[in-house]
Every structure is written in C-alpha cells, then in structure tokens.
Length: 318
Image (cartoon, rainbow, N blue to C red):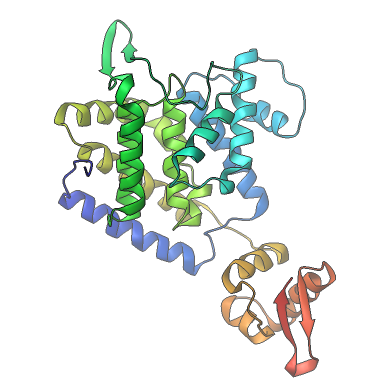
C-alpha cells in the first residue's frame, strides 16, 4: 500500500523552487564541487549527523580521524565517526532501492556499537524522550514485511524522487527497523536516494541544517505520527533541501581547476569521442589555450586518449 500523504500547495511550490535551483547548479557546474570542498562538506555532514545523536567530536578531530591520526576522545564517539567515514567512503557502492544494501550500510555504521548491526529487529521498541514515550514502533514481527513494502514503493511508485525520498525518510523513522542507529540511517538513505537523480545532494549541508532545526525536525516527525501521514515532514524536509541548495548558490564561489573540469566533463561525455571545440562549448568561460592545457594534462595523466592531429584531433576518456 502506498504510504499516505497529501500533495499540498506548499509541497508543489517547494518542488518548483528546488527544481529551479538544481537547474542553476547544473548550468554553473556546481553539481560536483572541487575535491577539497567535497572533503570539507563530507566532514561537516559526518559531524552534524552524529552530533544530532549526541556525538561530541569536533571538525578538527573528525578531520584527524579521516587522515588516520590519533584522537583523544570517548571510545564510542571515535567508533561512531570511524564507522561514518567508512560508510560515506562506500556511499556510491550502495543501491538505494535494495533492502540488503541498507542492511549492509547499517552493519558498517553501527559496527562495534550494538549487537546484530545490520539486522532488521524482531523485538518491540519504543522511543523515549525524557520521561515521556514519544513513539511506539510497529511490532517486531511485522517490521521485515513493512520494510519490503517501503522498498517496493521506493522502487516502483511514480512519485517524484524529491517526494519519495522524504516519504521514505519519514516511514523509515516510523518503522524504526533497527534497534539503534535509525536516525542517522534515515538521513543517510534520503541523501543516497536523491543522489541517484541529483548528484549535488552528496555534497550539500543537509545534516547541518537539520541540526540547526533539530527540535522542529523531531516535532515534524511527531506531528506526522499524530496525523497518520507524512505531509508535515515532507514539507519540512523540502524546506531543508531548498535551503541547502540556496546556500550552495549564494555562498559558494567555486573555482574549477584543470582536474575538476576534466572530471566534470568525463561525467558528461562518458566514452564518446569529443574535440577541443566540444570541450569549450561545455566550459564557456575558459579560453582556447586553457582548454588545450586541460586536455594535454589529461592525456599526460593517462585519463584521456588522443586521436588524430591539429584540427582533426579527438579525445576519449580511457
């Protein structure tokens, strides 16, 4: 059965705005930031995702762990960060439409932190905030079936991926399929779903923006529970996604270097042959000599193969 929600005017406006921002990002080649910026964004994502769950490590400490340096901190916090680094390093190897891949990611994310990491729960659980029971999750005996239904919706339904990713995130948190680690897994999986159509979402500060609005994030989950549909949560998450895209467009002055341009063009052209003119048409702001230097560098690095000479020269990615 399709998870319930209402397609409100607010949702439609947010989707239109997000689509506009993605168009701007694609036209300015911001959809895959330079390597150094990607690393910084990854560190921030790990920091804020885990900070929502109570982790105390700073950006400097996470950077040190990323560089395989020793850090003085609680053992649990260090393991959480090391596991998150491992998951994000393998992010592109996971298929977001496969339940077994979600279980595999959870096994990495929660390794050494809980027993039976990566296994769907069969026990009954509830979420307690202070002295109050905030949420009673579905009976453990039906969780596996509910997750299979959720993945069928994700894989087969005709909803827009922006909506499906939000619906999945909410339903995942409602089902609470693991004994622990559900919050960070739900946020991670929404990012992975979005990445399939919009690569830029791998590098956006979504986790930081959720952390800044953490009380509202949990409030919208609770409001959706009470209403029996994910509409309030969808609206909230679309606001977060739009804000993240706006941040990238407004505050990032990205300077593309040779390696960045070659990488971006490789994503665009694939295995097709192309000329320097084709390369210049794609990167309209660079000069012909810069294009020649880019292509020569890529040939020297073994990234490109070169065919022909002078005006008849063509290139192909190795």
